[in-house]
Image (tube, rainbow, N blue to C red; front, side, top):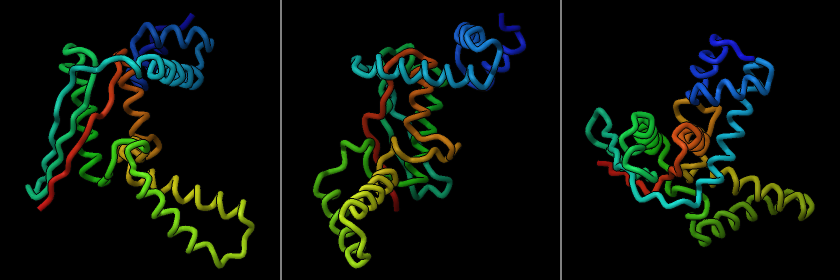
Length: 194
C-alpha cells in the first residue's frame, strides 16, 4: 500500500491524477522511479488509444517576442471545450508557440515533409559521403541517420523541448493526453518575422 506522502511526491513529479499515482505506486511496491516509468507507459498507451478520435475543439495561442518583431500563432486541437479551457492544455499551447519561436520548425510532423525535400537532402548526403570509400550498407545507414537528424530539426514534434531538452515535443503532448484523457494534437502553426 502506497503512503500519502509518496502519492503526493509522484503527483508533483508527473502531474498525473492521485488515483493513477496510487495505482502505479501499488504496482511497484512504492518505488517512485518505477512508478514514473509505468505512468509514462500508461500515457503512451492512452495516447495510442485516443489518437484516432475526433478532435473538433481546441484553441489558437500566440507568442509575441519582447522586441515585437516576431510572433507565432499555433492551433492546438482537443476533443472537448472542457479541455480547451483547461489551464494545462492552454499552458501546453503557449509552450508550443514558444517552441516554434525558438526552434523554427517548418513542419508539424515527419509525414508533412515533402518527398522532394527529403530526396534533395538524401542527394546532398550521398555526395558528401561518396568519397569515404565505405560499403553501401554503411553509407545507407549514415545517410538515414543524417536524414533522421534533419527531420528532427525541421519537425516540431521531433524537436527537443526548449524547456526540457531531455524530452521531445511529442512527449509533452503525450503527457498532456495522459493527464487530460483526450486526443490532443497540433493542427498547424505560423511564424511571422520582421
